Amino acid sequence: MVIRLKRKYLIAAAACLSVLFVLGVLIRTAGLASETSARPAAAAQGRELPVIMYHQLTDTAAQAGEYVLTARQFEADMRYICSRGYTSVTTQQLIDYAHGRAELPEKPILITFDDGYESFIPYALPILEELNMYAVVSVIGSVAQTYTDTVDHNIKYSHLSWEAIAQLAANPHVEIGNHTYDLHKLDTGRRGCKIKPGEDETAYKAMLTQDLTRVQELVQQYTGTVPKTFAYPFGARCSQSKEVLEQMGFQVVLTCAEQVNHITSQSADWLCSIGRFNRPSGKTSEQFFKNILV
Image 1: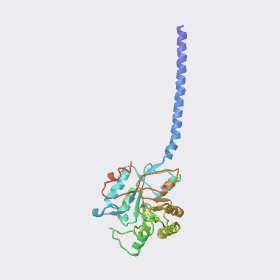
Image 2: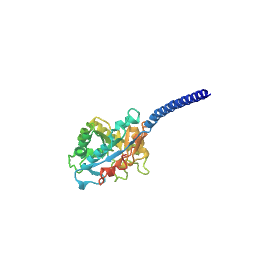
Image 3: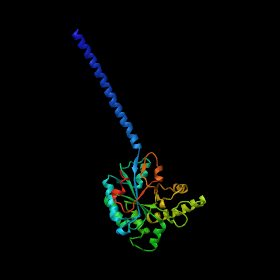
Image 4: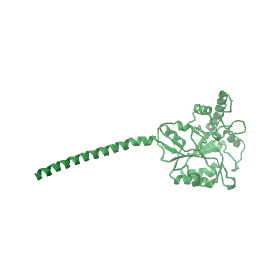
């Protein structure tokens, strides 16, 4: 009787062990399947892209202000960005990512310079080259023409000539962008290149197309390349300007909306409205980037 009971218990224990083994296999299989299915979902979630907007750099602290940063602080910014694990990317990398042709670094960042100040050459370029970083320099066509016609290299206010722009375009760390030919103004009743209230849309689109085409042609004439990036002066934009930019084939559009961009390889729509943070003076790198970098 005792032997029969022992045999009964052994059979029951063996059955339990078999069930537990099968359950373990099922759980592990389900876990692997879940992990595998989560990978594409995670990839589809995209990246966070901070974009920083610089203007003029100076070696004189007294000149620093809302749109002028000291060269020393700019260098500190670049080194701080690197120390936080961010990788400077080009707009071409962003375009390729948006169209599913390539991946991006885990923590990408885009550096931009508006207006085309000559101070970029002595103060920004060497640091970018040293740290293997990149920048988009968006130029105002009429200003570049002025400094081409009249030689003036006062680094406190001078802008890039077309010759200097050509030299920068040949540098792999620099991209030249379009910042309008003659619409970077506030004193004409128009804010940047935004349509005026009541303005005829057909006439407006023709005007904007002509202005931007002039920059495209001049950059191509002097550099052999055509800008694919446009930066809105003052961030002033409208639906009509968006239509013109799309028709002209601009692939990257920079605004002044201060926000970190959520980007994805599932859609390229975000390329047409990239927000940026203006970098003023008066803050350390840690203070400025506190709510921008993770």
